[in-house]
Amino acid sequence: MKLDRITDGELSILQVLWERGEATSREITAAVHEEVTDPKMASVQKLIERLEAKGCVRRDRSERAHRFRPLVSHEQFLRSRLQALADRLCEGALVPLVTTLLRSEWLPKKEREQLRKLVDDLWPSKESGNHTSK
Image 1 (cartoon, helix red, strand yellow):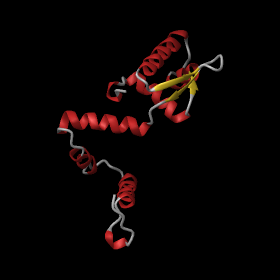
Image 2 (image 1 turned 180 degrees about the horizontal axis):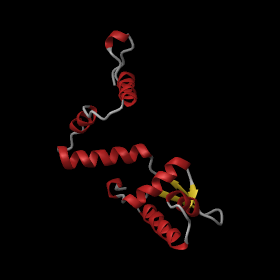
Image 3 (image 1 turned 90 degrees about the vertical axis):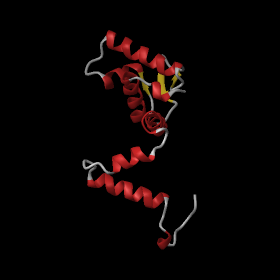
């Protein structure tokens, strides 16, 4: 599955499915558009079909209104997109991307604290006595 080839329209469908877990095409249309019309429904259904063909969405046909579930997680999608970006801009290295983001002045304090906790959880310092090698 080529997650770097997901269009913005397809991504809007996936975002609804990640948030809800599953949804009908009408529910997706209502979440993406302010009003549900036949042309908007047709557009959403076409995007869902493309996501199915790419292996990103599964259709449950057991009910009259088919339900859709994501086959790819948000984290898998992000990982794939970031690696594609790193491949294109940094010869595959993720460190320059992460470094640039961490040095950004606009990174809110709360997010900096979340990142610090994540780093501490993933790679505890030797002084904490909780050292594990991964």
